[in-house]
Length: 149
Image (cartoon, rainbow, N blue to C red; front, side, top):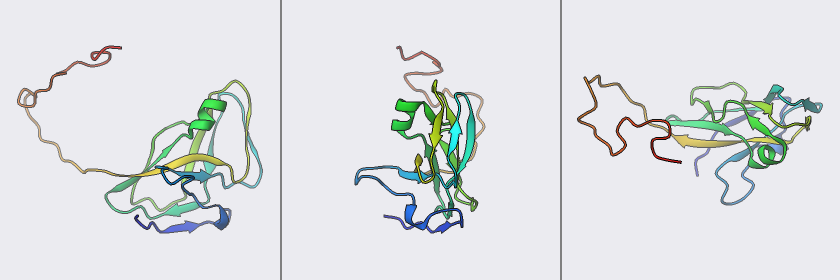
């Protein structure tokens, strides 16, 4: 396991840190660090603070994703999912939630609103070529729908 430094802001809750809910969980559940409930009307979006910042290790990113239960039962999703948190970001993590459901939804203080997954990434450089014939694949340049339904 990798240790990630975390800073809790005054509006955050030391007792409600992001955590894995099960042994097999890939994502840490993120809490809503709010004082009062927020009502999300259908089609409305809000930027919800989590109450913490962290130092993501170099070569890694944080990906903020929707929670499956909130999305399935209520239509509450992370609008820019997966949102990327770069390793050099030191500000508070915030979550853009949108209500895609048909009814208003209440976000309560401390509610688990999204999940954070850490992932390694590869830095690349560009090699300009005249075409990609030297790099063939079975799919080729087939795009949308080219592999069937």
